[in-house]
Image (tube, rainbow, N blue to C red; front, side):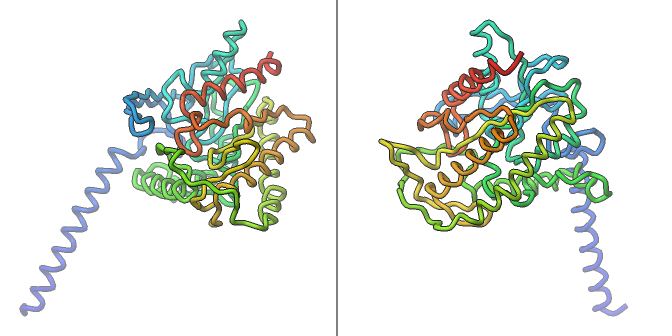
Length: 355
């Protein structure tokens, strides 16, 4: 055998050896972190208990206890008699609020103060939009031990201009009915990819979990966009039809829908004037600032409220519940104080609806 042939053989063995080591490493990671032998619903946290520090969020020592039960729900509720299941994204999930501090807990506490009991469960999924909520009714909610009287949708922020599913949050809206999708559903590496993409999207939209000092943010009274016709078309032709589908899905499962409008702190009102964060972010690939977000959020809240009015549905204008910087630790997520205020606001309006 010539020297060049022997060199090729050694190179081939080296490549093969490296490939086998890499393959063994991937298989080991997948077996340890994947869900190849369980029955996890894709994209959902089920039967988990996390305890971690939230000091980076609040700037002070704070331990967060986060619990999801075997039904993938959060909160204290009677599994055989549920009044309300809340559906939404991270502002519903509230990853950095400990058990007992979420706005669902505060709404239940408001009921208790008025001599009533509220069995409320939290089905919020970090980053999920109404696209993902529709998937929930096909693959998750029918599996629950009982159906609630009401599904409460706290929506708006993740739907500002969500025309297509997000790989980070909503991609699992497609049925897991092919070999490839079943592999993705259980793969730890694919879950890592979705997490990274989701974090990037949240950064682009300016809604990732992070502590923000609002006093140091520059504000403006002038927006970037001059034409919102694309957005009005989106609300009319894409978003509202999704709400219609959510209403039908809720009724089909034997429950009633309640919609709650939502806002961010990318804008604020002072002395009757609106100020928006000057720093830009991207919504559906479109560059906007805080004033643009204000106009888009107001238009969405009005669209939801008018939708409820036309169809004689219960709607809560949660958009108006919050407004102080102390209510938010970043642009989209509530502090314990904000959650308490929002929970009392929603609780007061649910009091006459439930029972």
